[in-house]
Length: 67
Image (tube, rainbow, N blue to C red; front, side, top):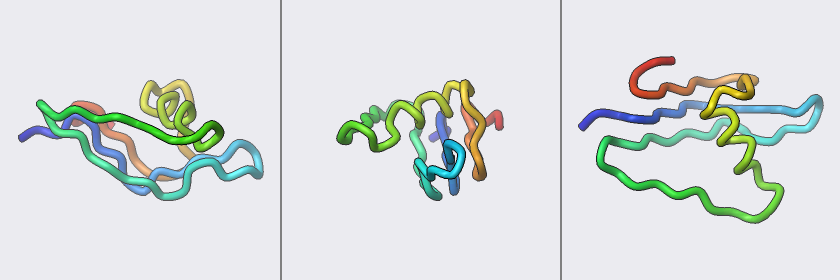
């Protein structure tokens, strides 16, 4: 199966405030994925990173094999 999304060691900070710290996951073609969590846990930030509206502090995001 092909990976549609691959996230490795992703971290992001707003200034001195760490939001995401070394997260990782993969979503394969044909899979369904959901993101759940409480308010203020970084879900919107993760989506903005996946949409390339924000740049990660460190780590890697691949969409359809493209970094």
